[in-house]
Length: 150
Image 1 (spheres, rainbow, N blue to C red):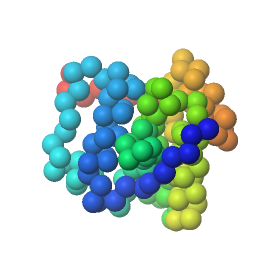
Image 2 (spheres, rainbow, N blue to C red):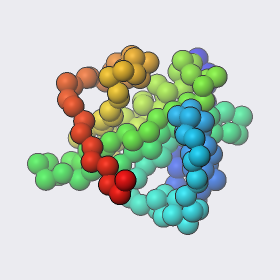
Image 3 (cartoon, rainbow, N blue to C red):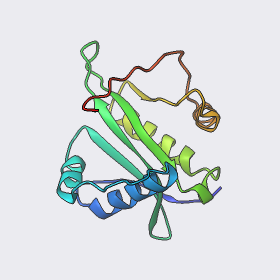
């Protein structure tokens, strides 16, 4: 297990957010990715419904997650959806991802959120095993999407 610093980014942490996006680009093999405008990324960090947690090793972002707060009408307590989570490939399976999950769950519990959830593709055995190992409970659902502007 590698001991890293876990940090929830604030509006002053644009450079670390960009470092995390570069980790996502590498781990998810995002071909021909174009980094969004820094002003746009800054505006995301300033939102109260967007959370970014990073894992820092030797001053560098080596992993992290992004998530969105979803206000609901069935309850006054919001849900939090983990949108992306990645750790640099050579550092995977060393406890960094688990520490990120633990950190966001602790933060959300402290803030009174009802639930944190994440989706994983059924064909991604590694992701399924990872989320199960962190205490996640699987649900049998099918995710539909509607591509717009293609």
